[in-house]
Image (cartoon, rainbow, N blue to C red; front, side):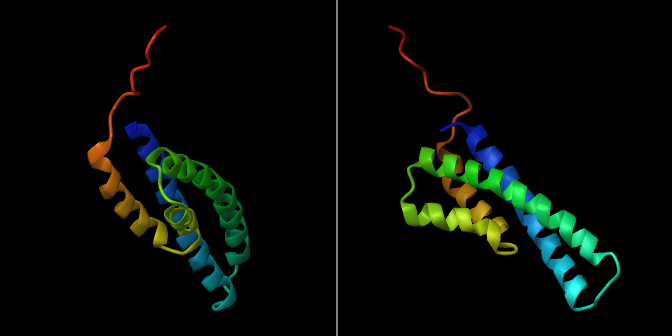
Length: 112
């Protein structure tokens, strides 16, 4: 598997994880502390997280398909972007598992 497949998954895992932590903080500020501006912040972050989570899903599914993961593992990785901080831990575990078998280039294709 190409290294770029894992790299784009890792980037989106971190982006999704950071946005989800920010969203959690915004929700606490909005509902628990009733801070001014928290509603606008929460709205912007929730929209960004929603759209970028879809990109995360595509990249995570592509990684799982190329790594030939079983369905349960694939679902576990896909749902990591919905639990605050889970994406960081799952990304680290997946990276350690896959890094030894990565290549920098695509496999050679036989020419007819």
